[in-house]
Image (cartoon, rainbow, N blue to C red; front, side, top):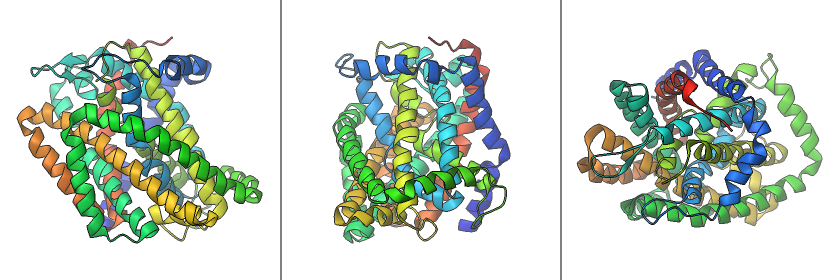
Length: 427
């Protein structure tokens, strides 16, 4: 099964998909006249500058949506995802993650601009927005919107559930020697409790957890890097060297570096998948430009900023070819002692759980769109079941499945925002 999934994954994330992602990101970068660079200060002013602003008691705040989306990205994507990228594609993947993220800031802006523009109230009185809405109402292609919804549910199960729950069980086993079955039972029960409360409870949970855990993550990452500071310059030299090396080193080379740099970057920040538009569209009384800038900030913080700390910490402290996923991250951070080993295991657990709960909302809206609100209860039950399954299965097969689902989800979304691109406006 692993071999079959890897064959499928190599086709989906082949050269055409990489070109599609980069073309879309470059198109909106040039169309906006490099807004992610020239408008960086405006982005900060319009996002972090209004961080305490609330909307109304029925909707979620911009900061709540921001923390929920960031919570869905940070953790497995930043800590475990970076480790799997380096293991699979070598140090050169870090450079291509940077390139992909900086360019994809405009992809994130564009899809969220459209998500706000085309959001509607559904027949239940709830906000229906995001990629479903602009594919149906913008493109006038309801069939494609349904296909996207189906792939979205698959991606939520793969990326949002199985990889997150698996990372939790692997981290707790490596860091605290907790048996997978014990983790599976506890995680499943907690998932049921959080997601039963809906988007408000999910957003409130993320607003509390994300800022605190991000601060702790930065502290121990800087500690690891400082301890191995003599390896920092050689590390950066190696990143740039292998990013453009056509001669495979340890089985790597430029193609693998580009492939895993982009695919893991997408896993980390979700730009191009359209998933973040589902949460951002729940914010009331906000313009597409402002919500687009929140999405840009998420990509920057998640991949350009935070992923770099994990990558450098791994590359300066340990052999990146020896272990995979959570075990590699924990090995790197354990070089500063117990606080690093236990701390990164705990961080991965909490962030992955935040991702697990936040991503459930994407699938919930997909189920609503395809089957109606009456099936949401069944979906939430099955979501908890899948979190149990993710905790007790091998990590490699789960990560490959998640990559496949992400690629399938990206195709209709990238097509839609390219066709509707002329409608997107910038500051």
